[in-house]
Image (cartoon, rainbow over all chains, first blue to last red; front, side, top):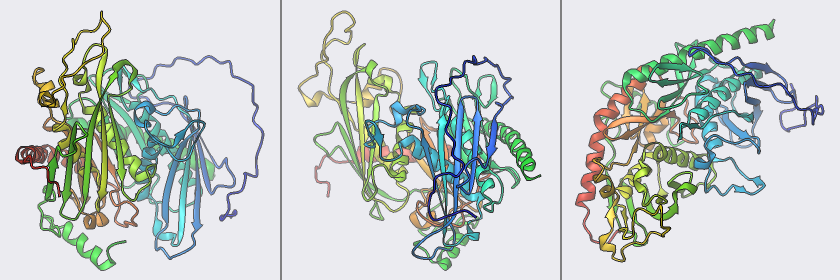
Length: 275
Length: 289
């Protein structure tokens, strides 16, 4: 097991090829309403973390590091304490930052001292959703820390002149899936791998993994433990339309479908890793 | 941790009963009693204070400013300050995010428009002086009262400034100021700011407005929005017991989420009516202590 008390620089450092730009044109793909984006997933890229995962889905790139269980000093605790910190790289535009990150005193010009409101909200959602899946009782007197870096984000925040949180929910969906794979990679004991889905309910019905939607509608992000009777561990709905109970049912079912698709991909990846 | 293992187990066992047995003998849909005072800050357009029986206290002030509408990303800006927490802590940032999101999504800010160019911008400042349970409902109820009693000065200049550039001028007499509600009347709409209702999930029961002790044993928490007499988005789940080592915390099921919306639809109106009654009963006596 690697050194757990200090954060050392990675052993497998290499210098990136700076200055080489890719000239490939972005192909305009149209997906079916019930089709989700293809995503690239890789675990264990960072050697000095206990677990790590890297995920790419079109322009959304997320990296998650898991450190833990690390011993803590001081008083005895029965169960591990769990914390999540999500950061965007400084040049990445955060979804709707003009609205949510105003007046925060941690943005003084070139550097910032803490997380922005959007980063804090994402951190909380991930923490709430992953908390029920981790068997914290197995790790007394220790901490488990998850560090998320959003390397690139292609979230769309404007739908026909009205700002929505659709892009934020879509980003959080990929962050969550990546984080649960990183937790699995760390070898920390889990009840189940959490996976999630994001849908948009508009006049024509449910769209899985919405990217380019316009007009009114309700967005939903629901995270599940699919092997534990589809237990809902994370739930977040946004939108501007009237809300009926049957709409909520449809959104949860849609998210469940997407979550199971992603879970199947994660499962086959992890099986491949194990063999 | 504020409860011993025996206390936790006792409290949990009583909360999961059908019907639920709460330590203060409240029904599942009952909020804690509160005391409110409105319009007491002379320097603000609207203000309100709510105090709960356990000593929780929140003051909200609403101030209006004339801005060029095209230059503003949003016409409502919220700030939350919680005594004892850093402004950029996760706790305060989340409260602020939730409140901003609530008003951004559901407050019809078009009605704040003064002329074709200028508009009012509302600054909502919330200070939580003391709290024990998760203060989001407390903050949103106080801002409901503050917004409901906010008065904006009467515009005396022309509303059409497309051809002649003119700065808006207002009546000098504060007695002519109109409550925000009056700006809505002409449009055939009732002014009712959105509120958050906090629900705790335990066993298969949902309880409104959980107290700090109840939060320690909850299996999950839900935040639902109530606006224009029905439940609307944003709705989210969260761990209400902040900084606690809550070993009961687990997932929800679909039935619980649907039930939370049904309960919100059923009992949310009563909360709004109670708050409106509070505003009517509030005497003009300036003593606030």
